[in-house]
Image (cartoon, rainbow, N blue to C red; front, side, top):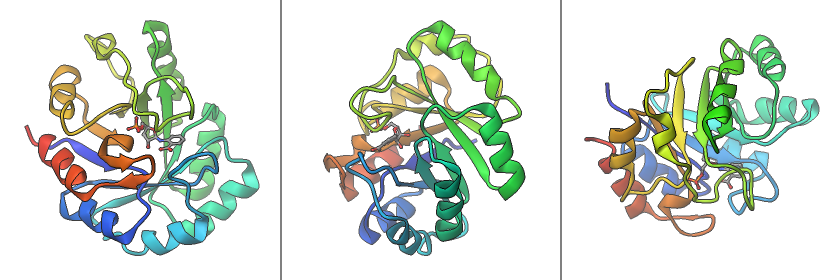
Length: 209
Ligand SMILES: O=C(O)c1ccccc1N[C@@H]1O[C@H](COP(=O)(O)O)[C@@H](O)[C@H]1O
């Protein structure tokens, strides 16, 4: 089974096309004002319309309140919403029941007990994204967690690996963790918020091991 690849924080048609051409299974758009990758919902909707059916459009939100979530879903019509804050399992259950849209939840992994918290999202999230703990931002910091924590881990639901993945380390990350999906943002950028088409291509190529 090929590893699924999500390129997140896309903000231009050019880098979106590069991700699609390079074989990404998912492309992500960030709506979070503090992020260098933040886009207005209207701008995301325009890019989203350029995503072909075989690639899934992921909308990243951080602790959205109900009106923002409703508006974002109405304007963007994403295939997936990636919740990247402290959203509860109940919030995700309600979201999925009301919209029928796939819900992912990012989880900060700092130690073994934090991995145990993933089980609370079984039946609530369609997938969890294991990411490094928050620092300047809740995510998108280019930092990785200790992948050896995943040795022998039995995933209680579908999952993906995020945090500090780059073209240079993603193959090793897949080999070590067996991640079925890898997610990168800052690892394929020239500078914060500016994606690099060559790095996107190199990242996608490096996942085919
Ligand atoms: O990318 C952002 O700016 C961002 C902002 C707020 C929450 C999450 C964000 N990004 C996500 O964080 C992980 C890891 O990113 P990185 O590869 O370490 O840069 C990934 O899921 C991003 O989509």
